[in-house]
Image 1 (cartoon, rainbow, N blue to C red):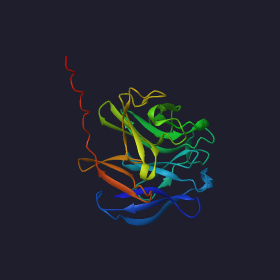
Image 2 (image 1 turned 90 degrees about the horizontal axis):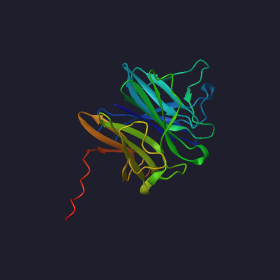
Image 3 (image 1 turned 135 degrees about the vertical axis):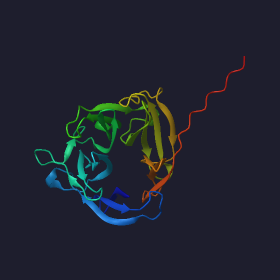
Image 4 (image 1 turned 60 degrees about the horizontal axis):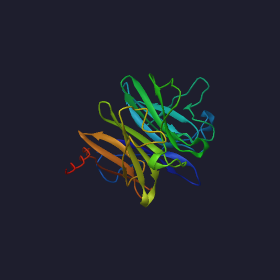
Length: 254
């Protein structure tokens, strides 16, 4: 089992670093060194790689990642060594929300016949979650605003690291981070529409907040786990996650 994570090298340079373990639940995964660095010849922002997300498609591993301005992709046969997927112009970028909007933090979910790519950006300094859909992971629809505002706010950091999971057919949960470190906060939303978790009004979708940052939901050996950043931001913590129904309100006495 391999995990990729962006990390900071000298100065502000960010690159992908790799760890390996035989079991998800093992402690002290084995460091495997640098897996990828940004390459300007492919249109990537120098030192800008971040937020790798890997999933399987037709027996191959596909990685989507940000370069601070675009969402990019790469592929691999073994999940360890990745080759960039380039367009006809030799660029790795699939799309960008807007120049200077800091398009980043992608993740991909298959819903019926469509792949959904969720990501964050903050045009005009208003942080939000966006999504595009695709049949083949190469040609993408126009972007769609799927979550913004509400209890989590509209600041540039109010919609970080979006992650969507379908817990049962037709029921989707969005995890959206506002703060990192010892005071971490992620807001959770529910929807039956994977492209609408509340825009400027989350009253119909808000579920709760969690004291974690950048969570990802994993299914492993029949169990569900949640991975999130350590409060120090220097590693990842993983624990089991159990979905429980919300307690119903007590009946009012007459």
